[in-house]
Image 1 (cartoon, rainbow, N blue to C red):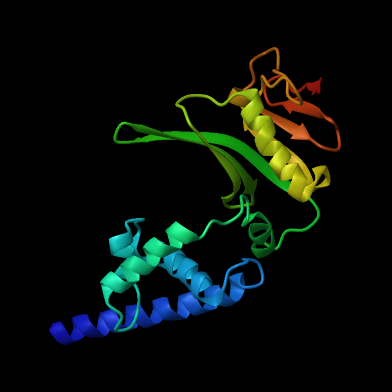
Image 2: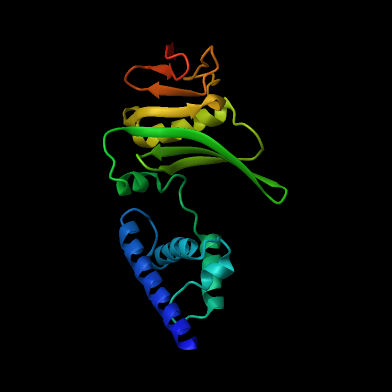
Length: 214
């Protein structure tokens, strides 16, 4: 049993090492980091997927080879102490990995939960594919509850600065987001979902199936 357990760990370590190497090659043209720090970033990503946690001590244990866990733990700490990636640094990379071109569907939504007594409230802009939604840009709100118009507009301006209005085929958002002062207005019948069409330049509401100018 000990033999098979060791063999399993060795295979897992080899797979993690290969995954880190492959991810480093993929990210190197897009992430402005040196070789060592890029490898550390890839280690973090692969380890989080493997360990299913963000606890650094657990992530350090996922590193392959004979390196001490304590050394890897310190390496991860130094990464967070000295590396500051630009806001939205991964946005174009996500679009490229998804193989998207031209225009695409976007979803605007918000998620709110608690870690202990602390609220974690994220305003999220995601790309919608046929089978899943991929987070693209987001804003961590320093409060509980709904976002306001200024916060939504700021997020959309960040998107437009990188991709332009021509990349939006459709913007989907539920009724939390239809009371913006700019660009979005509420359906008079209280629709659950509104679709913002770039080509038609109006909302098409699911409930009343009528357009509302913006």
